[in-house]
Length: 158
Image (tube, rainbow, N blue to C red; front, side):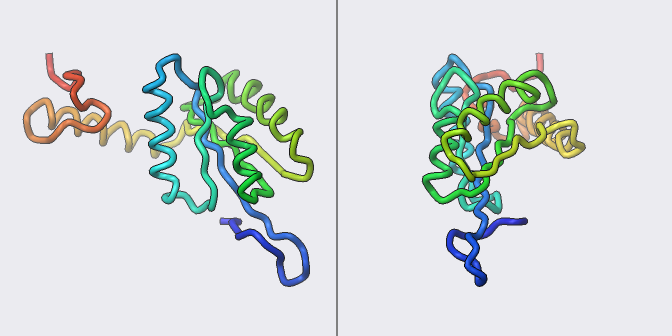
């Protein structure tokens, strides 16, 4: 998928190394930001990129700039910023590209892009089905609580 390692190609050109910054909105709740960061870091090996960093658009660190800097420090020649958003909107259209351009300005020669948001994508409906099924089975006593609901008491029929 266009991913290569650091170093030189056989013809002396520097090989491309693509890094990914997965960016959410950010939250005033520190535990929400920490949960997102843990998830991205613990799941990064499921993506075919040698560097995957979490970031928050606002309200927390690491910021897009901090994550972008980290990617470059680890050898990235291209940084793809992947919004953790369900659909297009002002953050995808204006805010994230502006923050990414600002971060990239400190790294001449490093290419970047802001990828499309997660939806609309039919795979999201598969996730909705899995989550609803899990919650209904838990509410009926046929399954354990999922990680998102654990200890919250929210997964119950009323």
